[in-house]
Length: 159
Image (cartoon, rainbow, N blue to C red; front, side, top):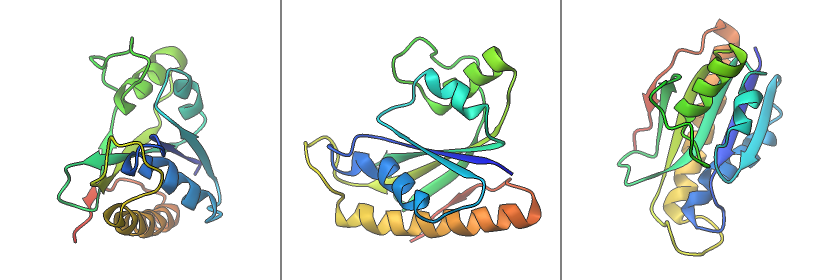
């Protein structure tokens, strides 16, 4: 099973850098069959990238969440805005389907933070704690998915 993790956000805006921070951590875990991509935002170019994987995990920061992380399935949505310079995961999947006839299984991993908008390097204490929890979850999920061959999981972090 091939998996792509796309961590996106702006590390120069505090907790908005949770997606890239997560992707950097996972890249160090040495997961077999896992490719990592880090970017500021999702763009049309990501549509081709997602066609190369069976499973895609989009990782971004969550604002105003009452859970450390949330992991949900996401699908192509033809009503998604495809004309923007910054796309939602549903739009990237729609483009992959429309242009390349590819439909990878996809999930969004949102990680809660509480310091957004200010120009600031580094993550808040809350974001670092939630990042730890999200990383542990994904590593467990990845291992279970590879053992069972099934990736159908929807969970929210409790804590």
